[in-house]
Length: 345
Image (tube, rainbow, N blue to C red; front, side, top):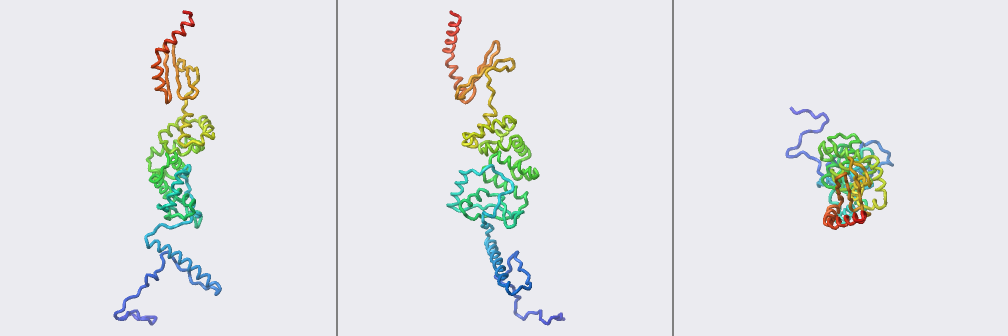
C-alpha cells in the first residue's frame, strides 16, 4: 500500500512524464553561495541586488574561462608582489629590453605563476616570472598568470625549478638563492629540490657564499660566464684583508663601467697576484723580479751560489722567452764585452 502523503501533495508522477531538472543556464555557479535572505530595509534592496549581480557576473566570467579550458587569467601588476626570497642579483637590462620588445610584438606567450598573498588580502605573490612581470609593467599591460594555492615549500621549489629550466641564472646567483633559503629555515631536501642539485653540490654552494662577503658578491655581480670551479678557488683563497682591498678596487668608476665577468677577473687578479718584491729570501734562494711598465709580463730570476733560473710568466711569457732564447748569442757577447770593460782586458 502506498505511503500516505502527509502534506497533501502526490509524490507519484503522471504516466509518461519525466523528472524535471534545472536547465544548464540555471545551474548554480560552483563555489558561489547566495547570501541568506535576511530582512532588509526597503531602501537597501536596490544596493543589495546590485552587489549580488556584480558578484554573480564576476563568478560567471571566471566560470566561462574555466569551462573553455582557460586556466590563465589577467591580473593587474599593481596587486602583485615579488617572491619572499630573491633568486637574482639584478635583472639584466639588455635581456629585459629584448623581452619587452618580444611581448610588444607578440604578446605575453608564457604566463607567470602566482599564489594568493598569504599576508595581504586581495594581493598575489609571484612564484616565478619576475622578468615577464617587469616587462608588462613597462608596457602598461595586464599580466597573464596562473593562480595556485602554494605553500612556502611549493613556491620556492616551483621558483627554483622554473629558473633552472628557463633562465640563465649564474652559479653565484644559485648559490645565493640556496643560502637565502637556508637562512629562512627551509630543509636541505627542499633546497636541493628547488635547485636540482645533490648534497655535495649544495654544500659547495653554501660554502662559497659563506666565504665571500655579500657586499663583494654584489660588487662583482652575477658573472654569468664564471662557473663553480673559479668561484670555489676564489672563495678558498679570500681573506678579510684581501676582501677589503678588492672592494676598494671595484668601487672605482672604471671598474663599475666594466661587465660583471670583467669585474670578477679584476677581483681574481687582485686576489691571486704574486708578491713581486725585488729581493726576497725563499728557501735560501735569492729571487729578483722584473716587470715592465705595462705589466704585460713578469720575469723572475731565482739564483743560488752556483745556479740561476729565469722564469717568464703572464700572457706573453712563452713568446718573450722564445725571443730571449733567440737572442742568447748576442746577449752573451754583450755580457762578455761588459766584463772586459770592467776588468780592463
